[in-house]
Image 1 (cartoon, rainbow, N blue to C red):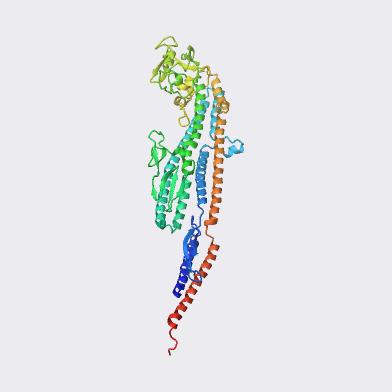
Image 2 (cartoon, rainbow, N blue to C red):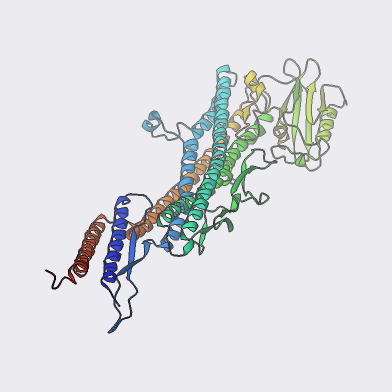
Length: 586
């Protein structure tokens, strides 16, 4: 049976329901500009009716839930695209740095002359070869020789500087990897904490921790930009988070984290990424997206590839110039000369002795001269690198003059290096090395080092430019060797005999530019896709102030109606309580 007081309860329920709706509307309006906030909606249903005759009687309204308007499928798509965007945008920044380091700069004079190679590595290499051409015109000119030395020093220091900058970029990227791992772990801890709070609120299966879920979704989006992840929701409202297939968060527990460890045998002391509870498994190559994946790719793949090309260019310059220089002679000759490069073992065939340049079967000559430059002996030394060792080469040179351990020319091993000397009052020089062994050993070479980091002009050349080997036959007026070195500028030596030095460097810059542009475009494309998906999510989850203003009026009017209903019922109750039973009383 429905009583007046029961009817009053209908009005009370209406007040409470509209009050909750007004509260939610105000909450939406207050968070209209809050990043990551999802619009909330109060879901109401009619209360369970009373079963009366002639039929059920309504008992008012009930608030069954406050629903968060959000599409979980779109969230998953956004996180996937954010992971790709994090990779491409971070990689694009790394490519920009590489372009800054390796780019061929222009200066105003170069632009005016329509010569884009007037500065940069290509121009420096050209000036180096041009200096040898100038030397061929004036082989006895001290200024021409000084110019060769100075342009060579500029070239080697340019290689050194570029190599140092590339190495520094890798070190900086390595530091960024450690910081990114720390950032990921902080975000994981935040998500685990939010999981606990959400599970505590939603333990009854009816409550919804909407605002905390918004914060967790924002944290998951931030995390996905740093590393690829997969999520699954549990019945208690918590989510499992998996990185590379491993659950790092299981429900309310943070089960493992990422860790940066230094591999003991790594000469660079670079960090490897592991799980803290599975430190034997290195994850570096498994991150295919996310900012962490891009940093690992920059450090371990992208930058090393361009380092390798720079080293290849420097190594080719060293080997080719030294090969020619070692077989010629300058204005001054030698009385004692020790090889700059040591073999791994003096008893191992030279082809397998760890020398920095290739050696062919061939021969070279050692010419011994007196103080007037008159040849006192010309000794032909044949070599087979697959058979001959440094010990046998030393023995052959020492015995070439017919006197072992003495005579005009002597040779001996000093450790794993070769030392050649001439008798008192005599000098020696080299001529026509077709084997390349002199350059490989570092005898009478122009450059030292093996790559862009170590390349340098030989110390005796810097100290005594008259040692620059311009002559092929030992006569001061012969300039065949200087011309041959100058002509290296146009010889197709690199890329399987298809590119000269400058073409190879231009190819490096072209590869860099193409890769950089591709990654930049991918970053723009994924950013646009993220923006589109976010806009679709915003159309559902975003707060419309116009819509909320309409709701505000609706709920206010409904609240006022419920209040007037209660007033009417109250008056009816007053009539019953205070007015009934007064009939006949004067």
